[in-house]
Amino acid sequence: MAGLKIGVAGAGVLGRLLAWRLARMGHTVTVFDPAPGPLPPAPGALTSPAPAHAAGFTAAGMLSPLAELDSASPEVAHLGWRSLALWREVADALDAEGESQPLFVQHGSLLLAHGSDRGAAQRVLARLAHARALAGEMPAPEPLDRAALAALEPSLAPGLHAWLLPGEAQLMPREMLAALAAHAPGVWWCWGERVQRVAPGLLQVAGEAPMNFDLVIDVRGCGAKPDATVRGVRGEVIWLHAPGVRLQRPVRLLHPRHRVYIVPRPGDLLVVGATEIESEDRSPVSLRSAVELMSAAHSVLPELAEARIVHMESNLRPALPDNEPATHTEPGLLRINGLFRHGWLLAPALVQDALEELGLPPAPLRGFPPPVAEGGSSLRPGQARSAAALDAALAPTASSDDSLSRCAAP
Ligand SMILES: Cc1cc2nc3c(=O)[nH]c(=O)nc-3n(C[C@H](O)[C@H](O)[C@H](O)COP(=O)(O)OP(=O)(O)OC[C@H]3O[C@@H](n4cnc5c(N)ncnc54)[C@H](O)[C@@H]3O)c2cc1C
Image (tube, rainbow, N blue to C red; front, side, top):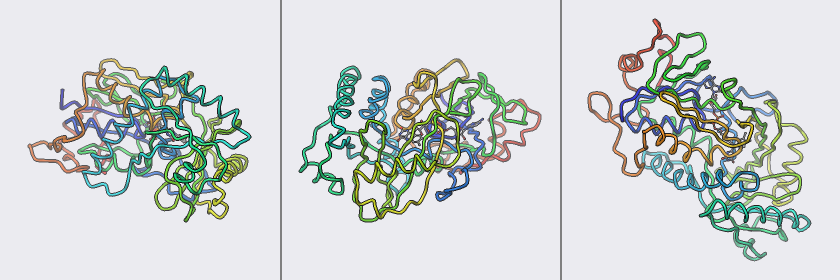
């Protein structure tokens, strides 16, 4: 089935991945989001609260199905394990379309524990072993001795207990979100548009008349209230600039009180995260969180003492009451929400399953033919269809479609 008119509410992780995939399948996709544009607020705003933006921008980008088993279900881990290969394919496809920056890196990750916390670490490993047996497929954590750890990550403090989680990966969230928008052929992006009503085949932007679509997709995350029983769970991260501190892969510290991770990013940056606080407070990072995150990070990477704090950010993870993701399909409507603390990890597998359920199985990404514009000529990535063609395709029920005139290709 090709050539559907699809309206998407929300341009976060799910919204952009869906738009990117559906446009490549030949559908006419229009995405609505209240954000002012495709890019996140600039890093560096330490004191003033940033405007609400997708949780996906704030995320560390860890793709850790094994480590997430500490708190997530085997089903979540299994979805995450499937997603690793799918993200690699997405990154390869974007790379082939000219993305020059690394979007996806797969060197495994490390679980670490201080000597005094070995008991807590053993309890976590036992939970992982039990859940891994249920989830299947995934490799076991590999214990590392002092020499093996020093060979893998020489900057880490000596004397740490360490386990390698093979196959785990990371992606660059801001760059991936930007690339998905920039390389989505013919998608119309309607920024500054808050969707207030979603129903099968119908989507309504605040202050506008309802618009008809063949399929409406609701991926508004925390913004889906009250249609979804979603809540925001506050998370805080800190960016450090640490030239000379060598870290090849994400590390996670097993600690009785904190789940702290350090994720390397290009440009000598390290992201330290993340708190998990039952609050919908989007205000800046608290002193207590900053102190706890940074002291835990410093305890495993002593060379961080001279790192510079370049950015702090807080955001809300969209979570449902059981902290599990949920997909709902009915004719003319798809809703996905509740990706909680592992949205990047789960998104590709959830998207693939949802499209199959809707009878829209996504085509393989490798060797996918270039998208075709109306009139038969090839459409370059991100290139817009004509405004007249868009208006005709969308056929809004409204007498006025002024809101759509504000929509643009990236
Ligand atoms: C601090 C932190 C660290 C994290 N680290 C990781 C990690 O390492 N790995 C991982 O897998 N996950 C991580 N996550 C979780 C991940 O970011 C989320 O699960 C994921 O972003 C959820 O994707 P989503 O598309 O459902 O929601 P979002 O990414 O939040 O996107 C929702 C979009 O909907 C838009 N929207 C809201 N209201 C409306 C409306 N009324 N109309 C139209 N659009 C609307 C928003 O503007 C936004 O663009 C982290 C999250 C946080 C906060």
